[in-house]
Image (cartoon, rainbow, N blue to C red):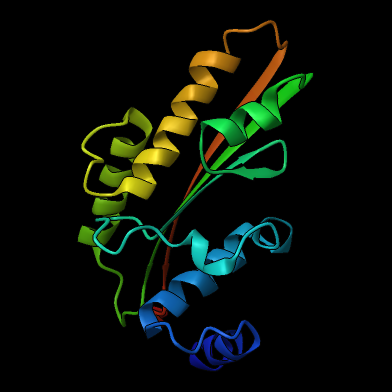
Length: 163
């Protein structure tokens, strides 16, 4: 069933040239992020650098807009009466089993991302982390009365064992 949905997703988004793992990661990302956010970007822009360990997709949503860097943060936050931040992190695996090592790697990767540590091997993730830190160091220090933040960690797999 999942294979059929992923195949339909590949065809409808015209991403036939991507690997099956990248397509599954984008499929999972589209489900967790929803159409409103996914429609703001080129779908493949959601993927992190190939060698990023523990994470496949990270999206920072500020007041309903995806932000990718410091300039995006400033564009969305300057003059805002409130700031609502949602950080979406995703690890997607095409596997028959849930792997606790992968889940622990996801948690460790999210921790490194939030703390802006050891990200030099993943320029895209490092840029996103810098944007997040800029948001809180610059805009959280202003007189904006309301800042609400959420962190969502998603682990998606094709595992279908219903024990």
